[in-house]
Amino acid sequence: MSDLREETRIKLETVSSATLTTVLFKKGFKNTFLQGPKRLSAGKNMVGPAYTLRYIPSREDIDKLDVFLDPSNPQRKGVENCPKGAVFVVDSRGDARAASLGGILAKRLEVLGCAGIVTDGGFRDTPDIERLSLPSYHCRPSAPTNLTYHHAVGTNEPISCAGVGIYPGDIMVGDNEGVVCIPAEIIREVADEAVEMTVFEDFVLEMVSEGAATFGLYPPTDPESIVKFNLWRNRHGY
Image (tube, rainbow, N blue to C red; front, side, top):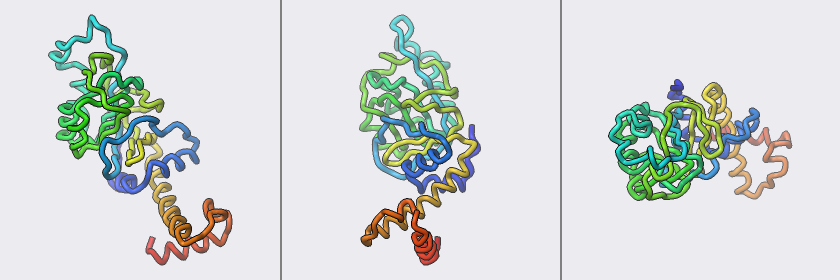
């Protein structure tokens, strides 16, 4: 599991997924935003290292309700083993015809101190999950039990979720727009650059609100824009 420093986590709680994707694009990473999963209820940023669960299609002779009697069932074992502060990321192959998990397992993850849940499938019991303090992202509600279409095969291994390759320990950041996956080895520099970009964009937004045109300001191709930004920054104590 990734060693996410507290100072880095705090920075990531203040920046948007849009800003993070731009920073990552500058570093050559184009496929980092999970297309599809939406947050059930708005709130502060979700930040944490990925702990993964992988599904393959279910099969009728194997996936019966009695599979849950087995304590080694990967779905149940994965929930119980999810580290405090991690984001539980579920590869459902983009198939929301059956639930990736439901309200009871989501509550268990909340009690265990999980930082959030993300799936490219769907949740059941969504009204219950929506009331939790746990940031939760899915594509749409899905009442059928996971066994209908999903067979859990592995935990804490590389997966695909919403078309993004996710490795255990990658840092997942989710805001009210969506979720970004960031390679753990560059997380500190990404966080620092995202904070800097956010400060500059706050300046730009204020200038635009006061009537300024964006040309030469955003991006700051006019040297005078940098001069104004530095004065604004000093005035606001950034």
